[in-house]
Length: 256
Image 1 (tube, one colour):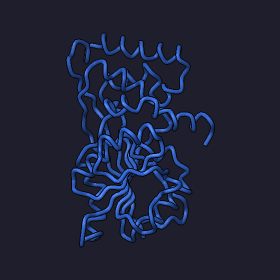
Image 2 (image 1 turned 30 degrees about the vertical axis):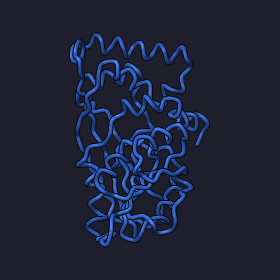
Image 3 (image 1 turned 180 degrees about the vertical axis):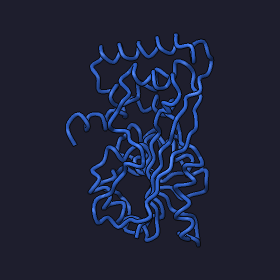
Image 4 (image 1 turned 135 degrees about the vertical axis):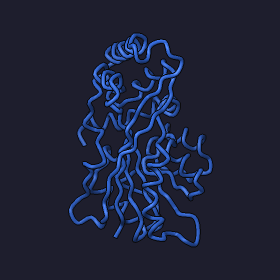
């Protein structure tokens, strides 16, 4: 990982509270799709499925998993994000750790899900660790929220702050290292939306890593442009609540 990418990966902690408030969750049908393969394999039939939320952040996905009655281990490396996570989801087993060094015993987990994080990891090391902690027949699931740029104003918003970002990807582009013990890979996209106040759109852009690592003056200029855009674009100007459309791109594979 180069130094700029490392800085970006570490940039979320200082804005953890804002991140928790404005970042979207994940569509329930997409999460269900990621979980269904392990259920079909009969994993943990005698008790609750044990799910590891990898790079859990402030718990947007963790909350959904806990609400489904799953036994959730939430792994988050950043102490600021982890503090919000612990406060927001007290029923989860929250642990410090990373994708490359999971504080979990061999074969202890039925499903590993990583939301909005696989682009930050050392894929070789992370894949080996996930394979170590998963039971045979268990699922590795990955997902990303992407702006739905089929909606015109969302495509234009991306151009305002330089939204094209190589760190975000569609699940169809995921590949594991040669020889990784996984099979039955599949990918699927889910369309959904989030409602935010106009000022929340500015805060949402502010939580993006490429904005966080900007110099203060540049960041202020970018966020001012976003504020002007929200205040003037005919599709969103003057609205008390704005529907923000997403495509959530999901990928899964089964542990051999």
